[in-house]
Length: 192
Image (cartoon, rainbow, N blue to C red):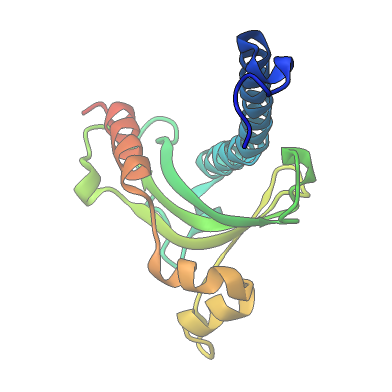
């Protein structure tokens, strides 16, 4: 049997154990920081894509992202009223893109309201639905999912969207936080 007196001197030294603990904590901290950096990059890219998608839709003529032939009403006011959009990104290709400039195609959802002065959200002209944004062009191309006389909306969506995004596009719209932000921005733009 081994007793503390027979143990090697380094084994009993408190200083050695303190150094071992500090080394272990330092290694753990480095691993966590590197992991956080790797996790932050996709989140940052996701935020960049969301911002670019929103900006593109808000700057585009509403006719570019209409659905099923519904156009924004022409308004007899000075200038064009702002379009305020909420967006949700379902995914993008290539999926391993590391920077916004690497992204070629974005699959997502948009809900936009034409913010005419003093017109509340509930009666505003709205444009909504799944869309595909071609980021390889300047400005990005916008392709909305539309039914035709021969193809139902669901079938057209399945033709346009990759399998991994189809179910999201059929079920999911904006998140609650994105919707709240959009409503706040809409009310400000409409002067409410």
